[in-house]
Length: 553
Image (cartoon, rainbow, N blue to C red; front, side):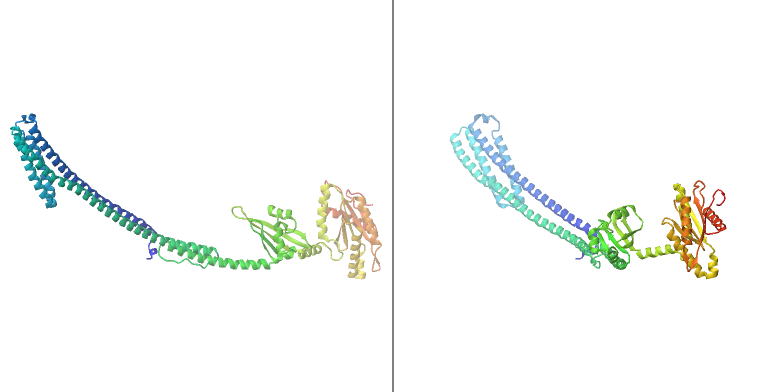
């Protein structure tokens, strides 16, 4: 019987109502049966008591009647009454009355034996009464011999009455016992009936409970097993739908959820495979930890860049990725941006960070490592190209402008003098016009090489433009600047380029008035003025710029 086509509420209601109805039936039936038994017991009790009282009363009346007649016969005081037999007559009447009641009861029962016994007792008692009166009257009238004869007959008659009455009274006792035995038998039958009814009630209740439990437990058990199966990875498992109740609805919803979960899982597996392919094939090194900071993922690029095997990285732990735990801790705790580090002959871009969920609980950490050695070399090359003059190898004009601003700022901040030397090649146009531009380029290349050789390492040597060159001399006063300029002039003068002599004219300016905060343009302008002073002085000489309109020496 498939109870699952019924709603759970209906099944539960029936499972409760059926046992209650059975209990009510057993209770009502037991109450009716016991009530009937009680009535029977009460009826038998009343009847037996009545009959026993009648028997007792008859025995008592008979005894009183005998006693009274005997007393009248032997006691003269009793004869004073006008009717000496009135007392005995009363007892005789009561006896007959009780005997008639007794007869009526058994007449209703149609017990002929008892009726015959009653009639026999009636006649014996009448005879007994008459003999008693005869005996008493003989003694009253002083007829003693007749009295004693009547007394013998009276006693004999009394024995006959007792003989007839005793079985009747004994019968009442026996009937009372039989009646009680019948009641015991009836109660035994009632007990058996109660057992049968109770057993039926238990069986019916157990059956209803078993059907109810079976209709609930089996689907719940199947759903539990299905959940366990799915939790173990079998997402294609389905819960059987065996009815149209709430559990069937739940099983149907569960199957829909399992199907959706299976599709989602398949999608996640696909995405995981894609992500794994990307991570494993990525050129960047990737290392990932779980929430306990255990390394759980190391891609091949990380092994290659760190020159460590995956097993070693996992064993050493995340903090030992670049052999500097403090560095890793700083990245994780201070959210340091990507950094450039030198590690095992490589330049690496390194970034590490920890990740937290919405409850601010650690989810894990990850490190992204990229080899930027080639990029840094290219960057250095580009920087060199951007800041170096291709012909002379000196810093170009752009580098000069940036360096001049920085050095003026440093000199102003620390109140340290600095100097600037500006020079050009004498008669350079003649080199180009007479020997060609290639020769002019060779002259400029030679001048640049010599300038780099003569100037100090901390000096910033630049090609200013065309045949003009400039040098920034940090922390150099007027005397030092003039000495350096003169030495440079002398070294170039001693130089021969393709058999040609080369000379230069130089202008020197010293930055020492920090309060005025002189700009770089003005400083170059002063040096340029000094250069032209050197030109007018005959070239191949050094002139110091006068900042207070002093006459040029």
